[in-house]
Length: 210
Image (tube, rainbow, N blue to C red; front, side, top):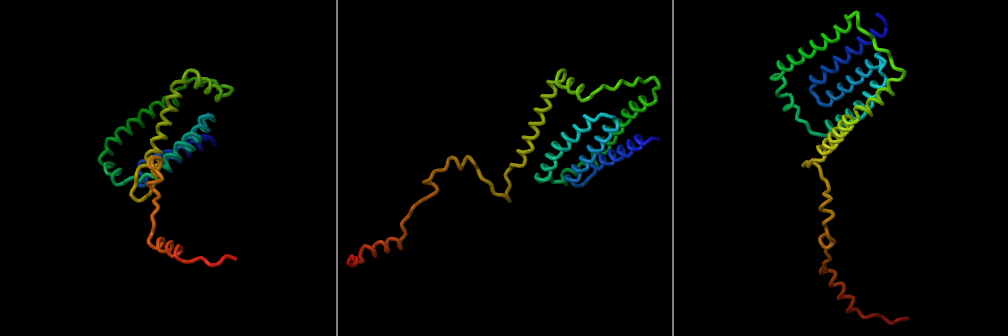
């Protein structure tokens, strides 16, 4: 076994462990951090397969943008973990069956590709980044724009979740500030002490001028 195969098994084991901890962690923040670890492990696997563009994109887009936003939302939104974990054991048998079926299908596809002696290895392009860019912005331009729009809606929704009204915080209402008038905020009144002082000044005779 060469070094590349050894690194592949190491990162694959880390990826499987992190993926399991994402769905079994008791804390939502810890689950998000394990998901970041799984993304980094998957990126390392892409690097071993000489797909540098996909590896860098996975780190920059998912770890650097989506997961950071998701982590901040999880930390700011008050998630009731008791309600989230309430149906875990109830839905575990169905999830185990579906997960086993997916693992079986993937193993069949992968093992068939590894054992096929007549499998043709495609020739590596001179620059896979250029090839992916040309394909992405020509044939798949419309799906790319739709995906960008969906991510934008997700970001707006995540920000809207953090702007909900909470009893333990105070905030300003811009609409009320715009409609306010000066007469509603400031009112001048004459106090009794002020009236006595004015009367005293008016009754006191002024001295001779120099």
